[in-house]
Image 1 (cartoon, protein in one colour):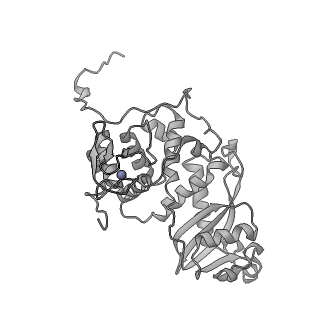
Image 2 (tube, rainbow, N blue to C red):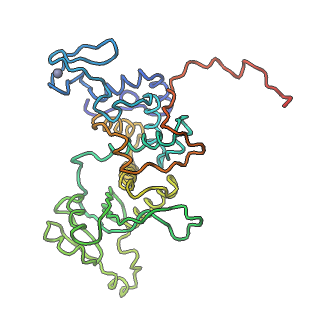
Length: 353
Ligand SMILES: [Zn+2]
């Protein structure tokens, strides 16, 4: 398969999504196809002849290794039915601003907020593909504080600490914006900023920054470095706050997204994974098909090692904001449904009440 096609390799619409993935078995088969498009490949010996065992697992005919489609992926040992996983992934990839754990919990009747939250955490954890391309061409780089209390927001909706975040954005003539990258920084020193630039921008690119001394030395790292000074902007009568318009635009979109979809309730320990989600969605904002993005996330998920609950929580349990928090993590019912036989015809409406 050179290039996945809509309607054949990925669903083009919610109607097609619902028609394709009616049962957990449909989802399992799709996941198997995504993981091994040319047939099973043994993860131990690399050979491809296999037996299907009675319990649905696969046994390598060469070395006897037994495995399943979900083993070794983020769906490893999941007790959440795949219909629920697929619907969560569909919402995650097709909703313009993504989905919060609370609305996912409500939409899919997931028993606990923690389960919904951990599902989104697992989806977020696969989005950064190892070895992805760095930004190229002309790139604005700046650092800004993200997260924590937003001044002017009443009621203290956003708790926690602001975290210094590096932002790099490709700019195209005359005023276009290409891809972006965001990463938390320890501080604004060159010891933090230089690795941020080298990790996210191809050598040879033109890097535009303000005059902050933390960016001194970028030319020595193989970049054409343009520094824009606030003082010079003021002298020209330009708005010094608009020295780096592309990074400021992306930073304000990211901040607005954290405050709207997630009500600002993001802990510092999890902020990077939320930024990864923002960057993933931003960089695919012009993708013609959301179904293709759905396929890409499942492809990343099937190629990603297992992610355990404690890895996502990062030492801290998610804040319970469910209306009626259950004591334990609940496991949602499958979204596999028998035909409902037109229940609205079965009984008369009772008008007496
Ligand atoms: Zn084998």
